[in-house]
Length: 417
Image (cartoon, rainbow, N blue to C red):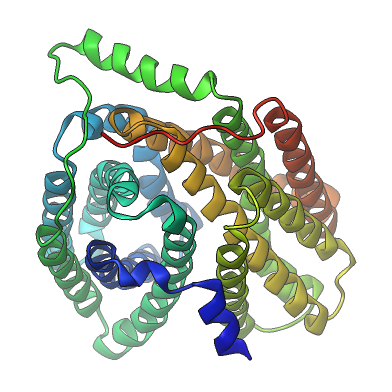
């Protein structure tokens, strides 16, 4: 029965497309590597800093800051440059950078971890919009939802696997070199698969010189999003959704250990349950994609996710939390896959990098604000009430998105040149 549902829902249909399959294989390998390196950074910084919370939070800042500083501008260059080349060069640079942490041997060199994490993230601000812009060039429009849902689900699964491996490898080796070397190799593997991509030619942005042209083209991309009620609703809804999700990410561990009184082994179980929920969501969203418009799938996904997060306020047993996490994962996939599909369908190729970067930057700002204030709100209101407030914000965001989309119920997808 389950296999029939997966087959009928066409969850794996995107993998039948050769070029998407090349891109996906390279990415899933490097995403496992990312999970390895990220946890290795945290474990080693914790070790060399004598468990300093400030030192550990510094790596999070180093990873998040580049999106805020360079995200918008990287999209301009992604629209100008050859995107296949952007993928290859980005992965090659990131692979080389991950060999630098092997030079760290004592606490005085801990700054190298921050520098490498920061540079990794800077390069990533070019890779992600390039990848998102390429997908609609190699995947038919009726398969975009499946491709996005499948990519997002396997991304989280790969990172969970990488994180689990990192704990084992760093523990056995007593250092981070296995994690960093394997992550570097994973990026070089991705370089190979990206170099094999055959991408149809499409219109790109004008290659102008001067800083004024950068700001002008950035303005063009943002104006395009602003003038589309559907795309504007995607940005607004995503922003407020990330405001809610950021708080949940920060507070889920103290909620498990303090409110529910379970040990930290449940953290891994919760991550696994979220993946299961996302797989179910990917199956469901691809089954519904041919019958329901992407904009309505997105908003139902947002509202459903908000409801399940708000239910955390009434969760007093781990058995109930299991269903809550499954529900969040299910609706999260629907919302994210539909949002990515709308952007890819409605934004012309020559503006797609800028639109993708703009959405990612706004999401990052909202997520950082939410995570920064979550601890304070959790102390003042209690974790349960923060969950309820976060869920309420997300539900309202979905309702507002529906209202905005009502003025443009069936936007016309762009034609690829």
